[in-house]
Image 1: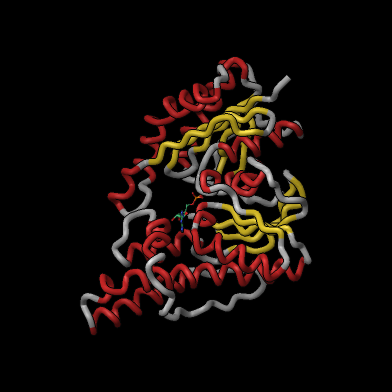
Image 2: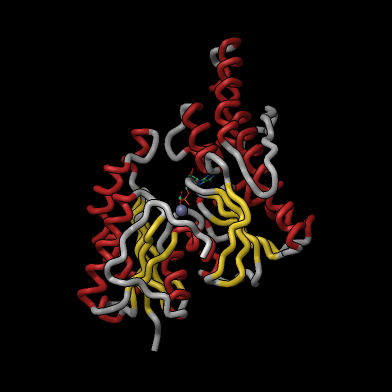
Amino acid sequence: MSIIILAIESSCDDTAAAVIRDGRVISNVVADQEIHARYGGVVPELASRAHQANIVPVVDAALKESGVSADQLSAIAFTRGPGLMGSLMVGVAFAKGLAISHNIPLIDVHHLHAHVLAHFAEPPMPEFPFLCLLVSGGHTQIMLIHDHLNLELLGSTQDDAAGEAFDKTGKLLGLGYPAGPEIDRIARSGSPVFDLPHPRLPGYQFSFSGIKTAIRYFLEAEVRNNPGFIQESLPDICASIQHHIVEILLDKLILAARDTQISQVAIAGGVSANSALRQRFEEVGRKEGWTTHIPPLAYSTDNAAMIGITGYYKYLAGELASMDIRPEARIPLDR
Ligand code: KG4
Ligand code: ZN
């Protein structure tokens, strides 16, 4: 008999649902919340209200698209955290209600674990052990993946995440939220001509908060000389920020791959949608002799397919949640 899992993701500002049959994605629906663009960032209270409005139609659409009815489901997987508490609560409460009414088990999923297992949504899949650079709006870390359920954290950011570096510098440039995709688009017509300070942290640690400050001082000085500087040089500024972030990320990934002698290497998380990161990762991979793994765009940014894939492997291992499980805004990933 098939194992069919309905997955729900509501950790931040996207409401998502997917249906996974025997480890394959058969539907994947995401409703994003445009409301936050107006405020230059995610407003938690608005996010949870939008999740409440979106969750029923999004789950309905995922079921309809999959051709599966709710009584055929084997289990419900949901994001337990990390994320915004109010947003997580909407997904958890909905998942519990559905599990109780259909008398099927619940599976709690760690959002970052799911970003990594997005690589198992479609072949070619990485071979174990592999390294994964996980870059999202809230996290930046290098992980050693021993198997589907065994992840080891090698290093992470000491302050801002790579996605935050894109979003915060973008805000200084007057770009909308999230600024990452905008910087990516604008950078295509520019060159990385402006130098930025390169943080020197030991091991596999990252620091991104300095970039925002460096950009602010740089812009203030340039605008004092030429008030039109930002408008005139926007593509070059975006290309410089992007180049800088990508090189910091890849430097540490190269270090980790050389130290561990692991040549299966992956990137994951929202920032892995960045075109420069994807391109440079391939180039570096060729030079270093890696087998590189880049998730399809639909599985890079937040989605429920990755929650369902992770739920599937947990289901196979018998790792189910109890009905009194609660969301957690912060949960360590090391298991
Ligand atoms: O993984 P994700 O969708 O949500 C979190 O779990 O945080 O990541 C969102 C982050 C945002 O900071 C957004 O600006 C960034 O991913 N992002 C990008 C691109 N697409 C999304 N950053 C740079 N270039 C992109 N193309
Ligand atoms: Zn995410």
